[in-house]
Structures are given as C-alpha cells and as structure tokens.
Length: 147
Image: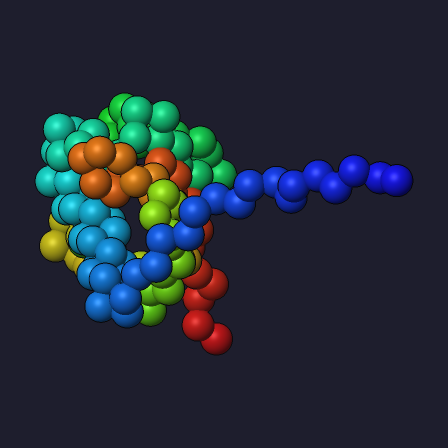
C-alpha cells in the first residue's frame, strides 16, 4: 500500500479588494513617473531612489546599469538635447512582490529649439521593497514610424 504524502505547501495568497489593487497600480506607475522625471532632470539621487541596485535597462541595442544610463542622459543634456516623456496606454500586472507595466511612451526630443515627437514601446518591472516599489528592469525600443 502506498503512503499518502501531503501535497506541497502553496504560497499564501493575499486577497485584495479592487480599490487596494487600483491604489497599488497607481503606486507603481508613480514610481515610473519619478524615474522619467529624474532622467529629464539628470537627478542621479532620485533615479537611484526609485531603482534597485542591480537595475538594468535595454536601450538602443545596449545594456545599461544605473550609472551608465544616467551618464548617457547627462551627455545628451550637455549636447543640448532634452527629452520629455509621457506614459500612455499602460497595462499593469502585479502581485504583492512583483509588478510589470508595459506602456507606450510618447515623448519629445528638444534640440536647439527644434522638437521631434518620438514614440517608444516599453516595459518596466518592479520589485516590492521595504521602501516601496523599485524598478529593476526597463526595456525600450522606438516604435515604427506611422505609414
């Protein structure tokens, strides 16, 4: 006769009300908005505050960490270019530990008084920390030009 083994323990599921889930989604999006504000202003301290120490970004076929991404942005600023970003059409999936937002980033690149509208397709992943949501990964690619 075979002995019956107990099934493996399942992780506890924390029930949330729709209003709590909506508040958490707004919270993770707010962190993303702060990240882009930090990039717009070349603010390394705020950028570090909203990202994990092992943050990575895929941009333009290259891999960046916190310091190298901010360095790139600061070089762009010194060259006279400035970016403004706007998160649109976001879709948020999250639980108590991880959040993922995929979105369309509609931005403007200003260069010597000339503005160019640009659209990127992006995804960001977040980890829950004792200090709140922190971004640990960002992937970005330019959207194809409209026909």
